[in-house]
Image 1 (cartoon, rainbow, N blue to C red):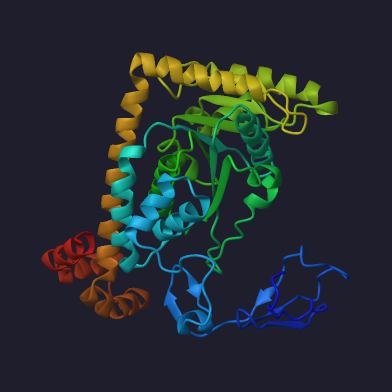
Image 2: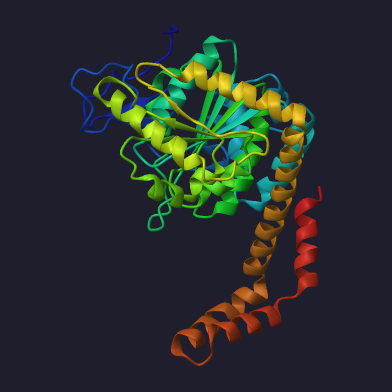
Length: 411
């Protein structure tokens, strides 16, 4: 500790500590263990008035008055974002992703300018999608797989999509806690993101986040889906290789075929193939191999197969990486790789059109003004939902919306 710096002693559970140097107070929750030292970082920081940039958060009054110097640049320029991402700085990359994920229109222009400047550095990474039912061990497998790739000299970025509560609108974003070893490696970057309640939002933000990670020098991008719903189809349209993680006892062959997700997979991995479960896993592998015979391959010229792996014992992971590399080599040679990438760009463009038209309609001032009246009329039975749509479309001015959209994209 530097001489002259005054910091109050560590607070007891539930106590409050005042930091005279930074001018804020922190409080430790009652559940903090007795005798926890400063390495136990769980504290609650008191709110501070004065928000200068929503992407940064609350700013210490002493920083605003010039009495103290910030530990990091509070407001970043376009050049700061581009330079930091190009250098592979993880702090700058994190803040650039936050900028991309922001729903604020004032952040949209800056985010798109940053992305446009970084675009030439993208497109060289291998993109792998992991999906599977909750409890299949996706996060554990990704950590073991990522550690193996880092040991081999690769730089790995993991993007996890967490479901957003339809009630509270919040997300736990807890996948990173399951990857404690991988998250501490300098060669890895892990970013959990909320689904936001719309698959279109997942598609746009995850795609742009993926491009930022590629621009930062990560050569393997792993995307983990929420494991339920139709988000698997969305992620399939973003990645090169799609991996389905399953467990033993998933049902008979017919039950497996009914799961449309199998039609999207380039490989199926029976996880937790260890100990007493190894024999069951081998039986399950045979069952999945029989199912695959009745399903059209997800990628032309590639045969999908089932494999055994154990994230705990680290078995089967090297074989899986060999399969993925063989997939890339074969599809690049046949032209399928390039064709798929081109198709994904067009899918991205179409989804962006849908998203922006949707936002323009519901953010239109006239539409918002008529919406409560129309809703009441539908609820009371005065008009049908179809008539309501026709009336709202009638008051929606395309030219007015178009001028607003042009303003959104122009510098």
